[in-house]
Every structure is written in structure tokens, then in C-alpha cells.
Image (cartoon, rainbow, N blue to C red):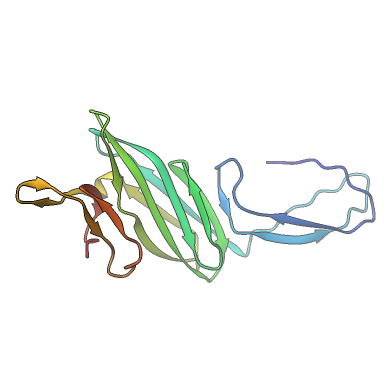
Length: 177
């Protein structure tokens, strides 16, 4: 992606790259300064101090489609994206640790909607990575009392404040507490 901006020659400008662009990628904030000297200069932003993590949601359940993808990044950067694409590169500074929270909604053929319990994972940015999340990694859990569906509250043991209520929730393997 190229952007052309006309600037005064010899003036010092600050630049900031922040957030994500048209939901095509996420980048941790990066800034610097630039002084144009010629009639036509280029500002090339160096990302050699960042790693690239490719996150892909793979739809592998035939009876269900995904909706409303949500990605939240916790760490030195806090970034939340609703309706993220199913394939998303994330650029983060090297040698840091982040927590990724990933969830989405599922819709079955009868147009019933289900929430997925957020999938939490720790990410260290020591090298480029590929993360694949499959819809088949999630399994429907129903809460039943006296043969009747009831609402229940669930959370992860590692993240007890991240609670979710529901009668039927799709959860990743081993996440209930």
C-alpha cells in the first residue's frame, strides 16, 4: 500500500502508524520522524524489529458457519477488532509476550446463533508464527438441570474474570472451570 502526501521540503514531520488498515492487518503502533529533502522522497517504514503472526480461522464444520469474529490482543498493546477477516496478519514488536483472545459466533442451518467461549493463547514474538484456529476445535456444551436447559456461568481457570453466560456455548477443548 502506497500513500502519496505533498510535504514542505526541509521541514521535520512526525509520523505514526497505528491500529489496522481496512481490517487487512493489525500493527502495533510505530512512529518516527521524516524530513523530505528532494523533489520526490519516499518514507519506507522498517519492520525488521517486528514479527508477523498469521492468524487463520478455518471453517471445517459443514453444518455451521462463522459470524462476527472478535480478536483482542492484551499486552503492551491493547487492540480489539470486531468483524475481523478469517485470515489476518498481526505485526508486533519482537521479544515481547502478548495474550490473544479469539472468539466468534456460529450459526447453524436453522439460523440459531451460538457464542464461542474465547480461546486464549499466549504469544511470544521471538519469530514469525502461523496460528490456525479450526471451528472443529470448539464443541457445544449444554447446561441441563432436571432435564431442562438452564443458563450457567463459565470461565477459564487461568482467566477467572472472563466469564460467559449461556445455555449452550461452544467451548475449546479443556476450557471449562
